[in-house]
Length: 244
Image 1 (cartoon, rainbow, N blue to C red):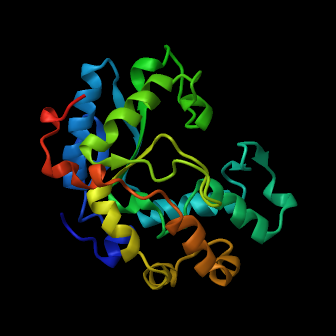
Image 2 (image 1 turned 90 degrees about the vertical axis):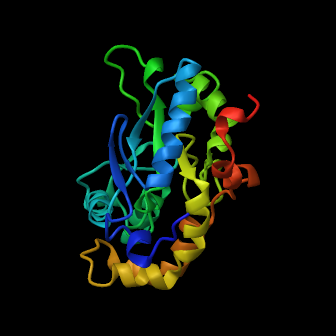
């Protein structure tokens, strides 16, 4: 598997990803092949996996961050309720953003290994997925998808890094990560690599971020689930031969 360099780790290049038309998403080639295999297996069980987010570059992540900090995009608390940044300190705004959105340069979506998925077949006409944990609960619209991913995602090399609250990013049951590459990318994204990517960026709340960068890295980058040996080994196994 390819090793990501600092520019790829921080989303400052697109040279490590390719765009798929169906399903429409942008992923690292090995991750794309694995996702297509995962999607085909899901289809056999009546699910239509769709990618609602995949590769995201540094500039896009920067725009999301700045929009949230400046009140141009919804800012949410840990329970998904709306916050008013006009009533908050810069430090409080930064903490709120980090519950749901990564610091530019620190997003796993920069790697081309991450994909947020829904089951299109579970949506009724006109229904739009919100990407909230309740949709993946036992009585949620994507409950069947949740059960299927829990049984099969690792067979194709995927795991869920935000499986539970570790004091940083909130649980994201829709977020899949391609372990053979992301497992090596995580330790490579050091505080120093992140700091280099941020130098010169027009980042809202920069004073707070720079003062807390080591904490942000530890709490919101490193505090994730560890991929299983099965997920790490999956590309060396033909998924079609694996028991269901």
